[in-house]
Amino acid sequence: FDNRIHCAESGEESTETETVYSLKCHISQEVNHLHEGLKCDLKSELEKASPSLGRSAVYVKDSRINGLPRYLTIQFVRLFQKRESNQKAKILRKVDYPLSLDVYDLCSDNLRKKLEGPRQVLRDAEGKKAGLKTSAKTPVSTDSDTKMTEAEESSSGSGEASKSTSQEGVLPEKEHQLTGIYDLVAVLTHKGRSADSGHYVAWVKQENGKWVQFDDDNPIPQREEDITKLSGGGDWHMAYICMYKARVVPI
Image (cartoon, rainbow, N blue to C red; front, side, top):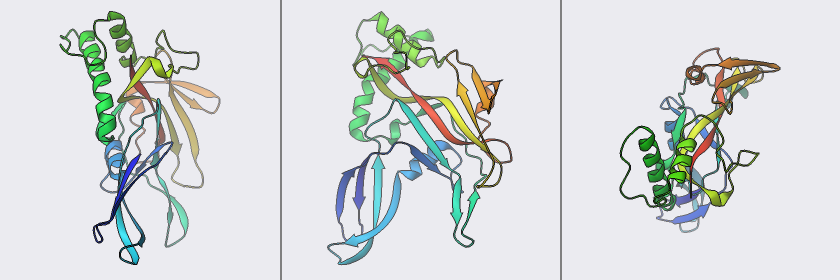
């Protein structure tokens, strides 16, 4: 993250960098979709000592993503501590999440500039696959049909590994570029109304594009359209952690 910390009362402003290993989606009455929750979490208030005022003051912290991972982990903050009773509780509110997530608008200006070229390559590849004319100007790739083909495979969502993918499913850093677009590959759900009990289940997308529910030692095939129904709102399994895989294009 690139963080800008500003105090409106004193006019003080500072910047800092911060490394996090997962994004959090806090759930409130205003949050109905994962993207809304992520956007809200990028802005927060904190109280700290103000050197110019000589006392505590409220600062606003604005964060922007300045570096993206190959696998993006997002946690739905469904468990919280009730102040009045000092007991854990679970938020059952339904929060939808997509099979494809674009975080471009959550990124810093610097990172957006880096993503523009790869995103154009991806758009051209997807347009070519759909039978549309590609862009006349492509900043990253020129006339390589091989690169276009690999980009199409990366954006197909089928889960099939590209030719340059290693056995661990990770492309060497110098052979691909991120686009800011991610595809859902796994969901961890929690079933039960209590925060201190319940059952955790994993829903994982296989290499062939099929989804499988792993409930202890019982794997059950699932339809893709049922995966986004794990968004909460009742006693059924509801998403607690979503893992997204970056949609990439070759250099």
